[in-house]
Length: 205
Image (cartoon, rainbow, N blue to C red):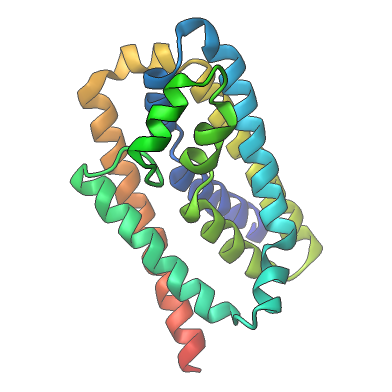
């Protein structure tokens, strides 16, 4: 039961912060219809590799810089809270901001699957923080396997959402996409507060 609860929590946390619906909307604005299949596959797989790499080495990198775990949880909560507020207010369509220059360059590239689609639109600061925080909470190998399973499920959700982005966009429409983004923002806000509170508790103790 513990592992099932952990799996659901990790999966919901990852999918919401990766925000595949927002990524799908950006992809449709940057690609031609015939490019969707290849871009969706490459972008989602690249994000998957980045997620797994962060899970494996993220905590080690933090230790090399002498950053304690409660501190990363607290700042991670702040980062996610900012993302959440932006999404709720409708100020941001993607999980992380990208510059106008990046968008312009992307529109001129033959293949934009890796940059900016996979990084930083899908896999950005929020995703990095989330994976590191979730990984620091794993104590035994079964919990780490559970987190990896959540990453795999998140990858599949991202791939399917991007692959069928046009159909999803037609069904939801512009207003539907905006409503979905705000709902995701609320969920991210709840996760952010959990990270922040636990981080502050750890620092205080």
